[in-house]
Structure formats: C-alpha cells, structure tokens
Amino acid sequence: ETGVTQTPRHLVMGMTNKKSLKCEQHLGHNAMYWYKQSAKKPLELMFVYSLEERVENNSVPSRFSPECPNSSHLFLHLHTLQPEDSALYLCASSQDWQGAIGYTFGSGTRLTVV
Amino acid sequence: GQQLNQSPQSMFIQEGEDVSMNCTSSSIFNTWLWYKQDPGEGPVLLIALYKAGELTSNGRLTAQFGITRKDSFLNISASIPSDVGIYFCEGKLIFGQGTELSVKP
Image 1 (cartoon, rainbow over the protein chains, first blue to last red):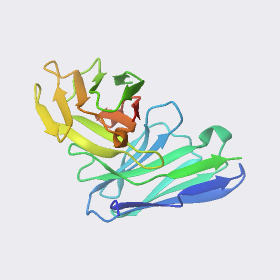
Image 2: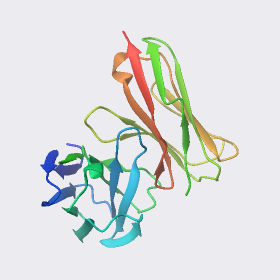
Image 3: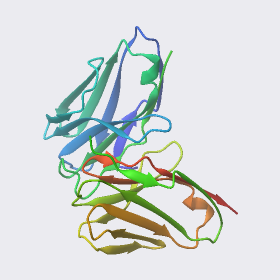
Image 4: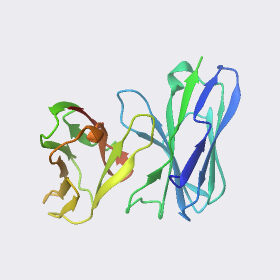
C-alpha cells in the first residue's frame, strides 16, 4: 500500500471517448498533483491542488480537466484526446504544495489513445 | 522555463560497481530531492537535501547538495541488481530527465 492509489492502472480510449482518472491519498496530505510521463521525456507537471484549490496549471490543453472535491481525492477528466496524449499519468501528494519534503506517488495510469 | 539537466541519461554497469549521477540547473534551488522509479510504478523518494553543501546517506546511497545550490549528485555504492531503474532529481516541482541504470549480475 503506497498511500496513493490510482485507478484504473491501464486505460485504452478512443479519441471521441470521455473517461476519468481517479487518485486517492490516505496520508493526510494537503496537496495533490497530476504529472504526465511520456517516453524519453521528464515528468511534466500538469496541475497542483492545495487544500482543494488549484494553485498551478501548466498550460495544459483544455481536453484535460482536473477536479479536486476534497483533500483526499483528485480526478483528471479526459475528453477528445489525441494519440500524443498517450502516456503514464502519475498522481502524487505532499504535505505542502511546495513539496519541500517530497512527494508520494501512485503507481500511475497507463493511458493509450487510439 | 526552468530545466534540470541530469546526466548521464543511461548507465550499464557490473554488479558491485559504484555509480554516480548528477543534476545541474542554471538557477538556484533550495531543495534537491532524488527519486527512483521501478518499471510500472511511480517514483519513490530516496533522499532529500535542504542545505548547500549537505551530504546525506541512505544505506548505499549518498547525495550532496552543491555549494552553489545549482547542482546535486547521487552516488550508489556496491550496486546490486535491484538498483535497476530510473533515477530522477527534482526541485521546485521540476524533474530531471532521469538516469536509467542497468546492472549486470
């Protein structure tokens, strides 16, 4: 049990589908994050939530829509994705949104857009 | 935007050898964190550094926060097969490109 649980682990979706990724943390942390990890690229920060408020949004296309209903849950809603959006999507949490004492990551959702 | 330059990109070593990797940036960082990612999993925090010049160990791992606050290195001594994975440095929510380590038994 890593403390951060992501579902589903794998997802294949068509470009016209709508799907959601779910993340739940059991650590009592105040901040949650979405990162995108593509092959041969560094982890790219997508969104940061601190105490359920979005504090960072790194120019992510609007086809990705985050939702943070409470400090333990984070969603990433997906619609009309492109094949280049295929990647590993990682959720993380930390005690504070600066991540000064490090992040705890989930195992990720491997997304394939066909 | 800010970038962390991590090197080498990959390493192929023999079991028992020591390994060294580093991260550099053009800007100053107040913290440096090192993570390891196993295949099919998310990164796991290995070592956190908070002061310039700080040298911290975690078992066979040793990491240092550079005096200029623009770099850090991670050493692994006496490597074993389970050290295989990708190692990332991180600061200010930014991750390096990763160093992929392969260990030959």
